[in-house]
Image (cartoon, rainbow, N blue to C red; front, top):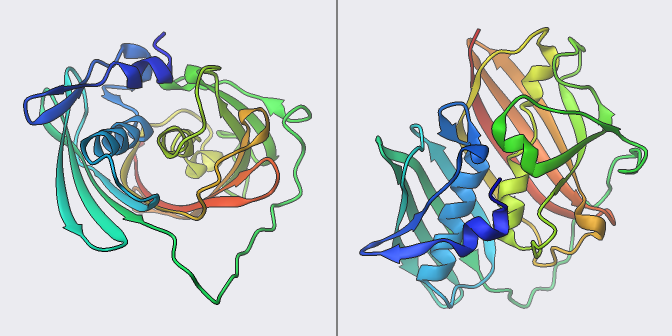
Length: 259
């Protein structure tokens, strides 16, 4: 099993692209799992442009399977005094797999200070139920149900509140690590299922709300909630809190649902 920190250390510049050799344990079916694709795009962007301000937002289109040798090509879309927009294309052996756009922005003085920080009442990680998943990449994460409903429970409310963390003890908190983790929960639509059925992320967008990514014991609380499951597609929202209740990321995903 290749730990996340080791995988990032193995990224290398090769011609006009950043390359990574990713082992089978990071797969979801015939492709790398989407959170890893996004994380590799972000890590390549940070290495290509070393003076970027903090990450503020990202959008990904997962257009095809990522397998074999992975290459990421970057472009600076626009650079201003305080912001930068970077494009990232991740390729596998079958061509373009993920297209990402990142928005970076330096902090600026402001007279306004408002945030919704209230974290839901949930069990602590120690009190929560551990559950396993039948996808390769899941072995890299601890999964515990703090509230809501488990996948394949046929519950009426497709919402999960999950305590999650990387199992890589050498990993230092960073936006790259958080991107991988934030896409690791099961799709909320699976709460409605009574058996395994394939799902595939089509698009994912998120905003990173703060620069402070410290949390106790590596644990993050992630809420995923399906807004709709119709015509073979599911739309879901997601929110990530630190262990101390700080809301650090909000996002939206669209899945293809098969079966």
